[in-house]
Length: 275
Image (cartoon, rainbow, N blue to C red; front, side, top):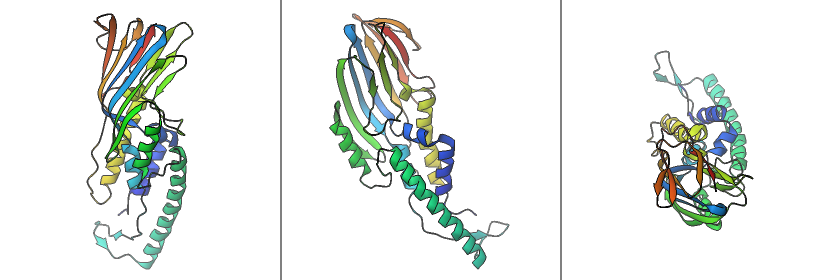
């Protein structure tokens, strides 16, 4: 009979995803509406309203919490029995080794998450404060269980690439949306956080962590939050390529591309637009 599954599950996740992958899927979308407007001269406006979740980080912190040592033994029929002194000593040695490895992993995670300790009870408030300091975050509040309600609005001219979201001291994140101007006047839009392999990692991690948590004493897992929303691009430019199912719709003097984003989205929204 195995003792607490937490350390083993954590190491399995690290092995499967890698440290950088865990950092990349730190923030993932929940229910949302998002729109990007691109007009002549590289003028843009971007908005995102709805949920952002740190489900993976929160579950990882819960699973990585220190656990008291308890020796458990069973006979061949899996019936629990008292452990011998030798068995207790062996299990204690293994448990202490796991605690040392967990401490090293915790230090690594803190570095990955911009110095934020996943086990810090005030991490939610610190993340809210960090986002509120940054331009564009008009509203940020913490609902609980790793879910944040946000409203983000920003506009400007594309003299350089635009990325959303961006979090200080965390350069390895997977961005929901990236907008890159090219020297020929076209603009490349990609939304890796709304589909494709990178989004799949972000969507899959909370499920893996929740399953791991359920192995620990049969506790109920926190609700699983997966992407569920709409992403649109509105432009008066020429749409050179896009991967929508329906193609552009015409609304007045604007062309509109729309993507439905959910847990089945396997292709990141992509478009190339000449302005």
